[in-house]
Length: 121
Image (cartoon, rainbow, N blue to C red; front, side):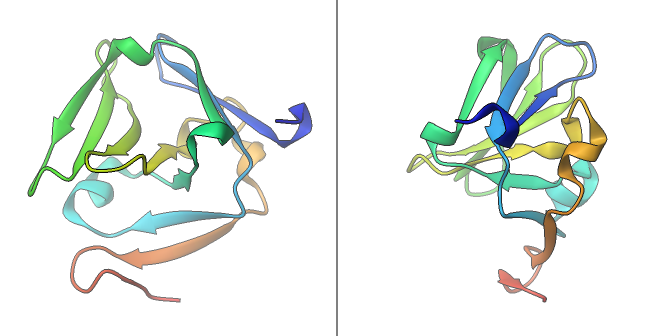
């Protein structure tokens, strides 16, 4: 991962830190969980993201059919990422970027996770 393509993120208290390769797009989902979390999800295969610290400091929340585990910092409660339970799909909350300008210029796609599981744009 070239350093200039990396976005470094952390929760509010700093206990959880991760880096992700700048994704080509971010997803804003309107399902009941994502809408409340206010997250902008950057999807990443395991080779394009890594925890710098605190991966074991997150607490998973399994919702609905329990296909996704939303992870929160055990101390400050920030939603850091979600992990698919049946596969290695995962997404990171890039609203946690240490430099908010790091996500400038990344296309934000609107995803209808509330009703029909399709992109609205």
